[in-house]
Image 1 (tube, rainbow, N blue to C red):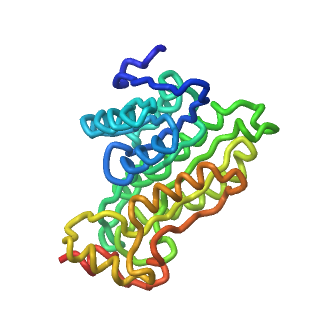
Image 2: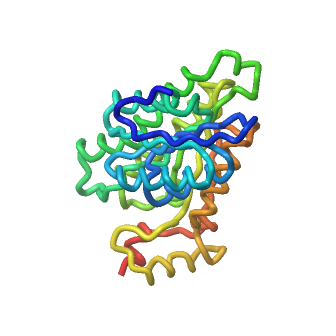
Image 3: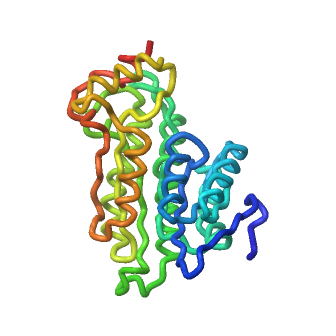
Length: 276
């Protein structure tokens, strides 16, 4: 096996007679991305663990996947740089084989508002949150054989992580919100353009992990105000992603997994309402 020079070592464990399914997950070194990587491995997938700066954490996820009996590789790329993004699918193919699923989990999530938004902030969010998923979808399409047009078993899927906020709008994190709205539109357009070789679907979590300056108490309170008394948990997102990866009849739509958070109007981002 030839491994690209800028990847970490590939760990190999293949069950006899098994045909491995390969998934590439962006931002898979930490948080929800890590949960997704381990969840797919537990279901029998081999995993390409993309990371930007978290090499140590990515290598740790690779080791955990190997312990589950699957193959894994850590792949580095700056998602704001198109040439680096375009290398991810070929590097995955060289290390593990052709991916049949890409999960666009990584996102830039920086605070801005209509009062201070500018070109720089907006364009950097668009590059990472929209540009990278577009390039990865194109590369996956090119890697998927033409025979997939008639053979459903050869088809691939792109899962774009969105946000319940798109269904429950508030003005905070403006550039991030605009980029996710663009990605949601791209999900529909790509599902039309790349069928039948590729399915393209969205997955919109709610508040899942504590972030920013949110306190544990604020995080718990944000969960309690949802209709189900709790928003999404990592295991909910993993289960939904695994369903979408294997749901051959689903494309061009978004699954909202948030405990009903999007049904409760909020004038501000939940982190500002329950942050302290």
